Length: 148
Image (cartoon, rainbow, N blue to C red; front, side):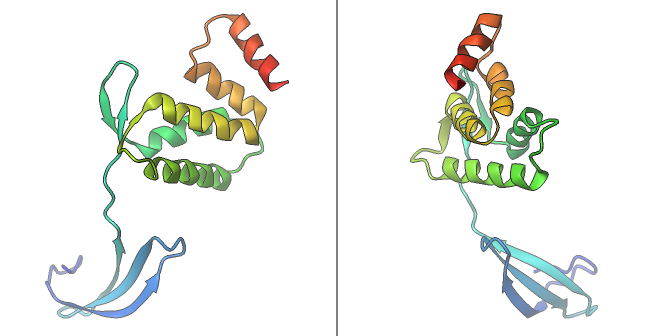
């Protein structure tokens, strides 16, 4: 491991712990040259998820896009940032458990919508209006009737 301070190639591990979420090993190291300490993380290298868009384009999965949509749906609600992060983690984990690493954007949208519906009906309607591309007021009415 290369020292981030001096670039020396050798270091000693002085402490190893499992990260809080159990998904990584956290190692405290000391440089063999400058003696400064630094932390490294060892994680499983996951195969990237490819999202297939409605028009057939393929994009790399981007957690920040998922979070952005969820945050907009929960805007001005009592749902906390921690709850939003946990929801994103849950959705991402479900995506990773799929048999295929290429996933339709509609599958992701439906998954998010299902989760939002259980947590907050207003957030669900906000998300659904964008995801399902509501144009007419009647579309909102139909979706609201399903909720009631």
